[in-house]
Length: 230
Ligand SMILES: [Zn+2]
Ligand SMILES: [Zn+2]
Image 1 (cartoon, helix red, strand yellow):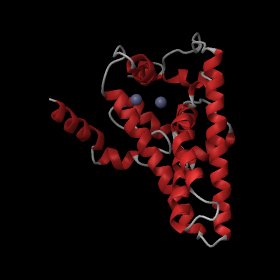
Image 2: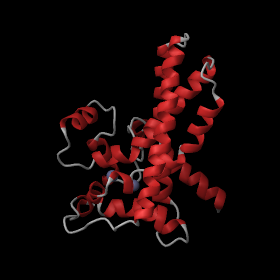
Image 3: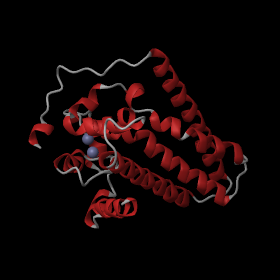
Image 4: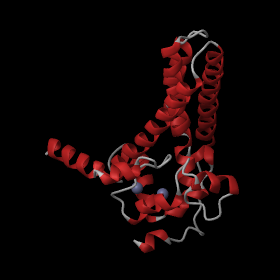
């Protein structure tokens, strides 16, 4: 296990991605960011119409926690089921998670656009739907739904980034402060996963890890799924 933590990454560089793919990813980031900002502006407008800001902050945080949970479920699933040579998903989805256990520091070498933008694509439909459905003068419930979606999107957009930052050896001061305040994934907490791959799956804020680990959530879920599929 120690070998995994100290695996050399100095002579490695990320495989080049086709330019068209990088361009498509950039378009995805711009599109989802546009919807995110549009919805955020509407939220500010809704405060002026009487939606309590405390309620908005509360549901935003709930959305952010949900992003942590989704990051954990996704990570656990890809660490637990299927193999790197499974058709279709093996190379594309499973391999990056397994490879990260062997070479954890390589994650810091890939660029944001190339490595960290899949979630931007995934959130375009719900963001677009929310922008399209909600009238500018949206009501209380619609505002809170929008705000929780913003929290979810913020968390999912930042998940890969926060995970990557947890592997930086000398992060900038601002990132260190965010990590030490546990607003984003704390490197010490994430190191638990690299010592024991059956715990600490959540990689957005990592807030849910102590709770889920204490009740053996993921091993139990795995037992249930394997029993059902038996
Ligand atoms: Zn893992
Ligand atoms: Zn990691």
